[in-house]
Amino acid sequence: AGNASFSEKVASLEKQMFEKEVTNVTKTVDSLLSGKDGYNFTKAFNRTAEEISTNIQSNASITKWEGYREYFYFIVNFIAFYGYLMGIICYLYDNVEVQPTFVTFLKFKHSNTDADWTGNFAGDLMWTVEPIVILSSPLMLSFMKPKIVKPKSD
Image (cartoon, rainbow, N blue to C red; front, side, top):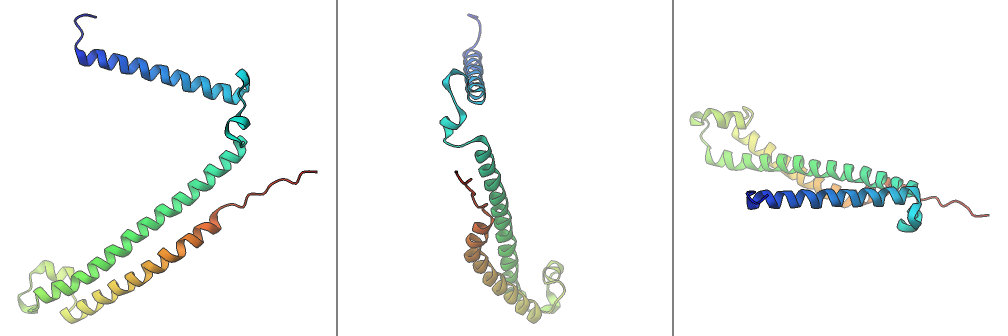
């Protein structure tokens, strides 16, 4: 052990600490689930395992839809960026006869006037749709939360 390098010693100590922590977590979870050692899951968390499971599942569903919303924002802003980019491209390459081939393909082979107008329309439309989604998404997500039904006590 005297010939081991410093990094090997550190790695060995970290491995031991990790294994000890895993053992502690395993013992704690086992005791909470079994009810031994005076632990009780409901006392520890003030909720039953089913209530916690339902809460996690509803949060997962809401988080999934929030992720879809963020993806939607990305697509909408990309379309708006591309649309407004058409105005810049049409301004910089105003002579249709000498436009490079890539510019023609960027404009989807439309004329400068059509590409500029359509690009501005797409950008304006996307930046109109985005605030509507931003303002309405909290309301839509609140409808997705499950209603907590408490059992009636006799």
